[in-house]
Length: 149
Image 1 (cartoon, rainbow, N blue to C red):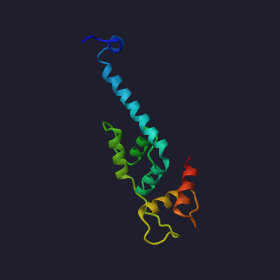
Image 2 (image 1 turned 120 degrees about the vertical axis):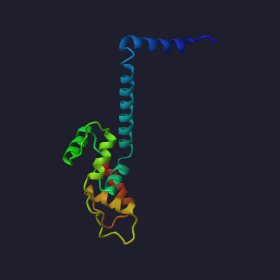
Image 3 (image 1 turned 90 degrees about the horizontal axis):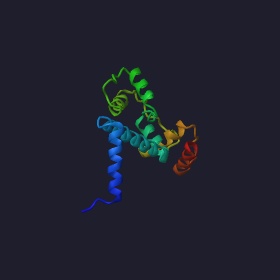
Image 4 (image 1 turned 45 degrees about the vertical axis):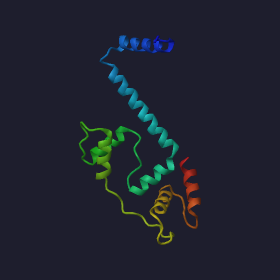
C-alpha cells in the first residue's frame, strides 16, 4: 500500500509543526484550539436562539449567562466564592446555587392555571418593558423577538 499525495501533505504538516513548536507545545496548541472552538460554538448558540436563553434565565430567576469570564469572577468574588483552581463551569454552578433568587412574579392579567412556560414568557416580556395587557402569547412572543433582535 503506497502513500498518496494527501498523506504526504499531512505528514509534512505534522513534521513542520513538530519542528516549529516542538513536542511540548503541541498539547497546549490543541487545548487552545479546543477552547476557541468551544467558545465559538457557545457564541453561535447564543446568537441563534436569544429568546430561549432569555426565557431560561427568567424562568430560573438567574441572571442571563455572562459573556465574559471577568463578569463571572466578579460576581463570584462578590458572593464570597473561592475561584482559584476551579473551572469556569464549577464557578458558574456555584454562583447559580449561591445567587439569591427573586420571588416569582405574578402576571395579574394572566388567567389562573397558566403553565410555567407562559409565566416565563410574560416575565421575559415585563423584563424587556413590553406591555402584555390584552395580548395573546403569540403576540407577546413576536414582540420579544423584535425587542431582542
